[in-house]
Image (cartoon, rainbow over all chains, first blue to last red; front, side):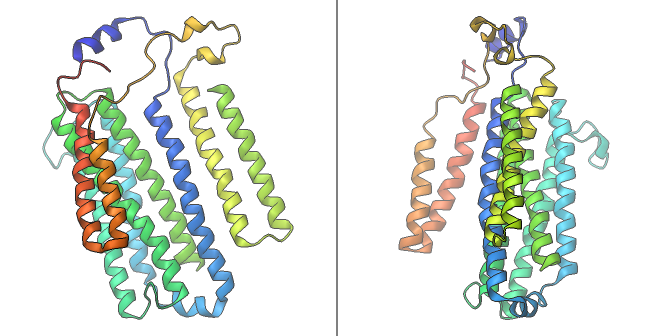
Length: 212
Length: 133
């Protein structure tokens, strides 16, 4: 494979074509946006049908400071993910210094940190769910519970999917003979997905916790 | 790419105007959100296409009015290698879906099989013997 690639690399390259994997990922993410559009529509429609009184009672049980901390961790994980992408773009798979020298980290360290932060978010969400269920808000008990768990739950499933994607990238890079364009592309498209899920959460957090 | 991002820019504008009109004639929440996010859908693709068009730093053959067919010859991109993994991938998704009808235990088995299939499928790219790109 390396011989085939190097012979192509020596040819004069007239056209700098867009990366089809990246374009395809963006098109897929825009369809994911419409999936979340359905969830947002469901949330706001239910809210207007149920009336402000029901909503005020149920949203009063939300632990907003806790969710805000969780949100901050998720937003910061997007930053660490982007540092991983910068490392991937200079084809640096792993760190060149000690573990605490984060300026010398490679894609592997940054993505592992992002994974831990994403896992923290999911852990926080599970704790929040358990707390709310113990306070009587459940998926089948009332309309608010249904829309709350469906919107945040589907987002949580997306975050979990992203965590699996990070694991797959880390396994792939571990198995790869060298870190090249292919591996960098995988890292970049996973970061697109992660940023997307992050932005969706900011919108969800604003809708559910701030606007109520 | 130039034509493509302009197409999506027009679509974004169309959905945004439509959304504003729908809101002012008294449309309900569902429509306002769905049409508004349709504008974002077009904006997302359009912005990305504009971004990579700008970053590619040149004119693609399809954007060149005087372009020839032969101008776009050469490497198109990277494609996936031959793999049998999509078959177990599909079967495990099927198992996970059937589990919703039959019982949760089957879904859990399906999700486990799905994880193995996804990892197997993606590691196909790292096989050393692949000679095509």
